[in-house]
Image 1: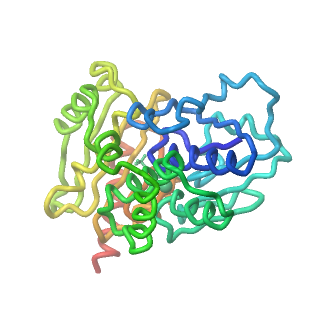
Image 2 (image 1 turned 90 degrees about the vertical axis):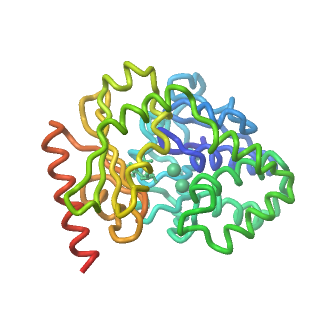
Length: 309
Ligand code: 5GP
Ligand code: MN
Ligand code: MN
């Protein structure tokens, strides 16, 4: 079984599919599982139709050989973890600094820009011959986790790997159009609702937005439509930390963090029970809204004071 994190991003889907293509070239078959459906924008990726929900799997579970990609801790697999046998051998391939080494074998490279970067090296090491399908999946992981080759994790190595993937037939304009330049109407409507709530701290270094359950209901938006909204808060001049708070189905609050350069939001989110990277992270907290907002803003304020000192 190949599995990634729930509410998958481009690296999660791209890496899941890349492992499938790599295994196939080695004459091995795999079952691909994700708790969440494949977001619309990634459905064009070769093999995406094979990713199924844990409920859909009717075969012999549980699995005793598992490869987890882009999964920082076992909980991030969500319901897919039910398909993992107690005595399973788990290969944990990831790049989150907060990875808790839940695997039997842990290949964690916090310096890698994306899990897809690690998989590029794996494929090369295994002598797997690249083709357009594999290359497109890997490229999508690199592209999305670097924010379109814009974030500070855009290293010379990333550009070299991306260059090699283009030589294998990746169509960069098509991939970028599908995954970065196309928005659903629901996504825009959700953004509109979020922007209506945009607030700033007194010093202007923190900006936050809220999305209620009504906002989702009334716009018809889904989880995947959240993608990119938090950036609008972080992108404002003078802001270091942008936050998107949203009410989950279960009545908890999910906070997404993005930072420019001062606050390590990965450490901040981890201290609140979540995790992530220095510039992008998240956590889930029990309500009520006012208390969660006050707690988070207090922690961010402290981190800004320490980091800015
Ligand atoms: P997002 O804000 O887009 O949901 O997540 C941003 C980053 O933080 C991603 O790299 C994701 O893996 C990580 N992240 C978000 N929420 C959580 C969480 O609840 N736990 C952990 N460990 N990581 C999270
Ligand atoms: Mn991810
Ligand atoms: Mn990733």
